[in-house]
Length: 314
Image 1 (cartoon, rainbow, N blue to C red):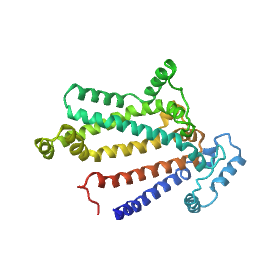
Image 2 (image 1 turned 90 degrees about the horizontal axis):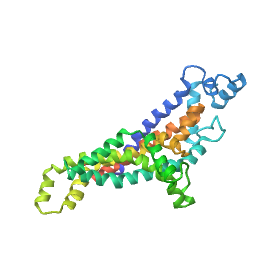
Image 3 (image 1 turned 30 degrees about the vertical axis):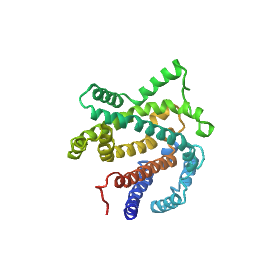
Image 4 (image 1 turned 90 degrees about the vertical axis):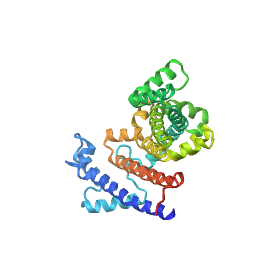
């Protein structure tokens, strides 16, 4: 087990190295003057020279890369061109809303979607199965921003149950935190319920046709025991894969949801950086998203060993 974990970590290093090289070249190999791209058409020669000096663009490209990598290894992601704030501080201040949204969304999705998928497979062809599949189709078909605005209109504007927008830290109390995270969580949960429930149903249908499931029924085991212990446990691998990828996707790419509900998270930071041509922030966000996917994939691979004893890694 330890050898496999070390092997996977070592395999992730070249991946992150390739991503770092791509992020570095993203600015340097862009057609035109990188300083002019960042500063815009109205920049003065003095402003362009200051930007080149700040980003080290006056050095040879291989020296720039070595210096950039050295700064990354020290945890220095540079300084925001727009605000002059260290990039690492900007990202750290935006992590809590995004991670809070990801954890609440995935937790609620698992609690609802996995039982729905199991029941849909168990009652295949019935009205319950069709209802679950209809919910899945709706969850996939309706855009997130439409769901978000409907939630705001109904629960915030008309009923007045929740604030329209904003975020409160959990350190301010469970109540203020929950009332502001509920609507964005519910909006995203509809999408992930559709995804996880469909995968759970498909995997369960395959497992329920296996011989050992029929043997379990023949031995007189109850429906609940067969479904939960013998069927669900053996189809956990694809379910965990979808959950893990979904969690990584939420952390690295909930731009629309954070914009609709005005959450000061990583998604909003990315949009603001792109609009302002703040390349140090853009580079750091891309690296962060890549790191999250690498770590999540590593954790998923490790989970396979515990979920399915038939899987053996050498």
